[in-house]
Length: 163
Image 1: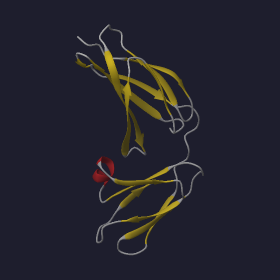
Image 2: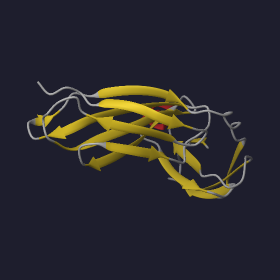
Image 3: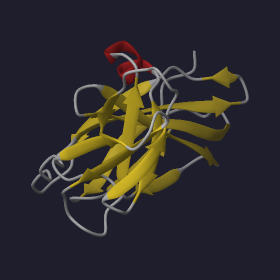
């Protein structure tokens, strides 16, 4: 039986998490697959995937949001096959930034100008869809460091937007 890997949180800050991965077995490990999950505005779950080569590993994930819960899952790739999943949860330190205040205005039948307030020098994600279900499961999205963006949409549709 292949055991799950051990995920140990080494440290965390407002915008990063450092963790180590190891196996408690003599089975040869060729690498790990790690998923980091977090929820955006209770509507959209985000995921970042890391593919790591080697037996032991310390990783640092940066560009995270302060005071946000993250779930890290990992499995090992071994000479006998993939291990079961292992999970840990961690909440980054600091104060979560205030939600931006979004304004969306139709420019014409296929363009919407989105603008919002919020801190500078951060990356904003803009998510949009024609229903709440689509907004949760598979929205259109883009990112920018600006405080406005023009989004091209399909004509004769109503859209929901999140930033």
